[in-house]
Amino acid sequence: MAATISRPVMETGAARARRPVDYVWAAARISIGWVFLWAFLDKTFGWGFATPAAKAWINGGSPTTGFLKGTGENALGGFFAGLAGQAWVDWLFMAGLLGIGLALVLGIGTRIAAATGTLMLVLMWAAELPLANNPFMDDHLVYSIVLIGLALAGAGTTLGLGNLPIVQRNAWLK
Image (tube, rainbow, N blue to C red):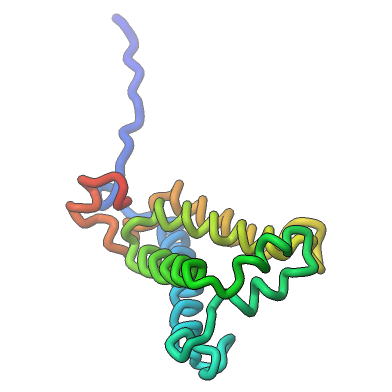
């Protein structure tokens, strides 16, 4: 009699019961999504948290100028300061904040959002080098690590729209 080896079945989406860790990942996904979405809203409308109304994007302000101009003395500052205030950079940055934020909050396109969010955060980290308070680690890298974890955990399926049939049929939407 031959012994049979049973292999675990990979369960995805709604096919498996939710575990507490799934809700932790969902909370992390929604929270980081809100960080991106809030940055978009505040920079667009100048609600006075990080962006005063006079410097709001809708009032002609540049959402990238303040941060990027302040990098001039840093290791890669010449490159990043040269991008400050360019319309295409402003549009790309704001589209990224909005797209990443919505994708993470809704739980659709979390892999794409994690990849583009990680890229954006690593570029922001690089613009600040050398760091003032730590040799290499800061919140940009911590958020990047969490975004990668979100993508690997399939975090869009818990408390998100990642279980929709269209998302399940189209891998790029997961």
